[in-house]
Length: 425
Image (cartoon, rainbow, N blue to C red):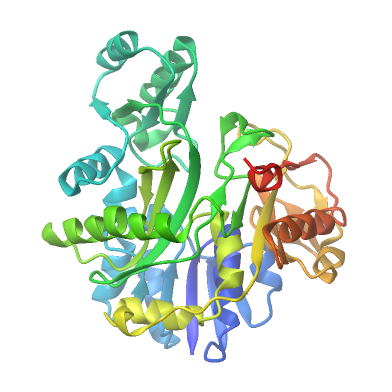
């Protein structure tokens, strides 16, 4: 069985690797892939763009591909799943209507209100002047979000009024492209964040192992938000009782409300949560795809073949599948280029990848490309190094031991991933 993965990041390298662990998958193609997928056995990169719907469909049909997996949110928001399904292909990823749950934070907030899903109070503004007036009225701390897709960088947690004003001004200035038409301003929530990625066939929704992401660039969760600097799974904050509450108060109401709107949502529904000091789960945001870098921590622990899970979602048979998990834990530490999430250099040769893998870690490449026989940095987040262990602490230690083998000029990574577990916070 042959599959195709759309995307070029660490998440897509992980998806391709995970699919190839299945005895049924013989070959995986990546559009466009990266330096890591290019070196993955039985995997081949295709020089096509993720928005080349016609070209992707033609290749998949001519080569009898039985599964197409859409990694990033942008092509889902543009309707790639609808297009490929209309060509008779099996696609793991929600339709364009369902992808609005990530593509529009205002739309998602309205859905949460309708579904009575717990979340922060928020207001949506179409003009900069109205948004700034609201900031003056509400005060800080407060959270400012670009309404549309901004590659994980459109959220500002403002602790001063000046920061909040700057964030609003940036949104309406066009910094985030199409994301700048509206701004969502919501109440600041405190607590521990957690990521629950769930798979669904539109009727049944099943959570994967809960993870905790580290969004901020700096240690101690300081500095601007990024696409994610590391993650680990499972996270102790998501106890069995808390997972049961998320299932009944968040995941099932979300799918039921989507269905009531006539949306047949099949794929991943990712709930970014805040567990408040009072022990209440509240939704920070929904995403319509696998998280990055949560995927790099969660999928290595999945015992059930990934293609089995995806095909059950596509075929409406998820209720008949019980997910199996490997014992232990996993932790992914992102190695970035210095300067990320702002300007950063490219083209630095990366050495030590094989030595890192020899430690037992999984090195998932993100912003990389091949240059002759070498792998060079080609993005902000360059690598995701995943350590495995009997405990979260052991997995974290193994990830950092592998990073010690890797070197490239201007490399940067946080040294405190999983600090809440290590410090008992």
